[in-house]
Amino acid sequence: MQDVQGKVAFVTGAASGIGLGIAQALAAAGCKVMLCDIEEAALENARAALAATNADVAAVRADVSLKAELQAAADATIARFGKVHILVNNAGVGGGGDYGAWTQASWDWTLGVNLMSVIWGIEIFGPLIETHGEGGQIVSTASIAGLWAGVNPSYNVTKYGVVGLSEGLRPDLAKRGIGVSVLCPGFIKTQIMESTRNVPSRFGAVEGMTDGTDESEFAVLAREAIAHGIDPRYVGELVREGIEGDWPYIVTDTEFEPAIDERFAAIKAAFDRIRDRVPPR
Image 1 (cartoon, rainbow, N blue to C red):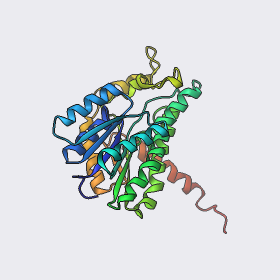
Image 2 (image 1 turned 90 degrees about the horizontal axis):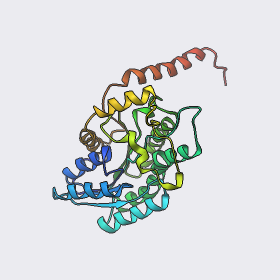
Image 3 (image 1 turned 135 degrees about the vertical axis):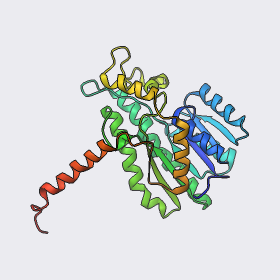
Image 4 (image 1 turned 120 degrees about the vertical axis):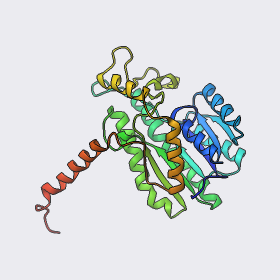
């Protein structure tokens, strides 16, 4: 896809943060956008603000961890715009406790939003993109924690999952005219640390990235870094460029490049250790 102008995009987690930045960038480039989020008031505010710029936008509320609600959102998108070219699986939460403090609810919530919604999104929207034969793009938001396990276990697991899913699907979907990109942002100015504000009641009480008043050292540092993080609109422009250029990976900065290099070096060292010991076949 060399130009998003006139295309239709569906963006989850679009009421704030990275999702809103992506929606703003796409709309400014002439893309029609369906915004989707669980936070209804913020979603309507985002829609109204974009509509005031004469962008062709609409909004649908959904808990994207529930496949039925995501399907209903897809149906609403087709009813409003007739087709869809771009899927942005962006909704995400900063949930889950550290080792020794895991609960079923926090794992279910984090896996449901961060990973299962991406799986359901591709399953639902992939065929819709294929149907019109005009090609398209799927962008899924992982994290730099999808390339380097630097956060808590459940968050890392979901983000590595999004990276693996995207990498594995890219060659297959290319044959169907659909590009696949994975977004791995660093510290962006979002509300990720306040994710528990939107926990559905069915999960009950769950752990977020912080336990509140008694914060871990990581939580304190992360909160400060996010408060002074990159503008989500900048990320949105990177994503728009990534869609038009069919970038396999979209990163936002170089802050964690040394840590990722170190990880790759450790993997390479594992191969080097056994290089002369591999038995013949």
